[in-house]
Image (cartoon, rainbow, N blue to C red; front, side, top):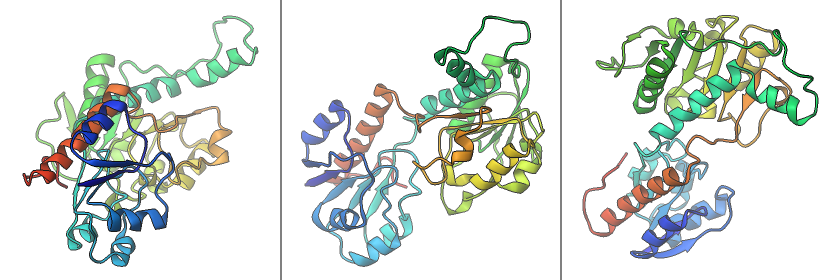
Length: 315
């Protein structure tokens, strides 16, 4: 089978793919263009796409009888793929759940600490040669240990964040989830959205897609404390970025830590100008072993398709 891999991958992943498929590796780190999206469906048996490769309904409409029969997504999030349109065209979709959980939860904790303790701001001060020495009132931030965390979305990643917050920092955990969660894995209370947004630290860990687009907007930010810190490690368009900028600019919340953006890779100039905002370049899963595990999981889905077996991670 002819396989298109849409971005450069770790060598371990490429070796596993090349052992079973005729691989065409696209060397460009940019997302697939409109023409490339259609060519992927038309010219390949299977495709390994990833974040930003927008296989939307209009793409399938333009290739009504695709040669491709599987989009083995590299990543747990698949809101860039219209799964219903793919299914209607006879194309299966898989993802890579589980492989990303701990790495993403670690980034959430990093953003909590960086934003609360003003670590990015402090490093910039040192690198700029503006540090004049230690002082009792220098760069006072917010204490994390013992505070309350509100987690929006209590799936695998939300539970992993809860474990770190509870066991690592003695934090009280409250969470909001669309369905009832019988076991959060730690002592925790499921509460309405407004109550979760009222925690000292709010972390968003919901999947992307139409159901969660702009889930966090002006109304949600209005429920936060003025001392509250907002963290997003989910998908950028879960947050109304203009509402976030307004909440920060008007001092209605104390700070934010972001790994994802609504119009990624574009980051609003207003956010970049704010010292109380930590900005990371989508590093949630950026560990070699994690990316290898993600890729090998995607290859497992491809091999299952090749051998006519049930797909391990069909979505």
